[in-house]
Image (cartoon, rainbow, N blue to C red; front, side, top):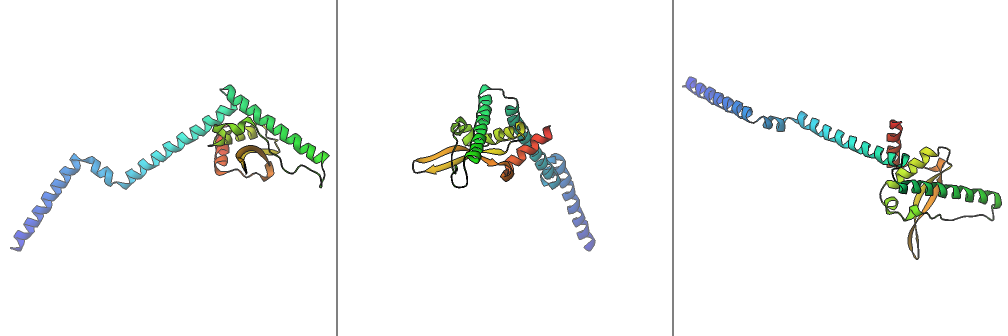
Length: 183
């Protein structure tokens, strides 16, 4: 009797094995779903595709400022340079005409850039800033858009920070890194 039981267990295992082989042959996607290496590879490919698209987008945005395709971008660049020159002149005048007791303490610069939604919301101003730093490597100051709240409301002004005191944001560092890799 024990031999007969063993035989039937062998038969059961044999039948199961045949069914399993047929199921795998008919459904190769089952193996792919179970295969974690394949899933990891697919995830890595998707991450790489996303990263490539993101880098292409950064390059394109920056290229739009380096070789402007619209007059509007050229005007924005000119407005930023004009504001920078005005700021430098004000600083120079303050240091030569003022003293420790009488000097210009606070002032705000307004510019058409402060009124453009594409700069006041989102990251587009960062590209203009990086463009400015690329074409003006000896600049003493770095442009920033700053929001000032008063009793009458909030307004956006253009400020400049000393270049030595400027700490680029993570996004600014990333843009600068991608731009340097393109050169």
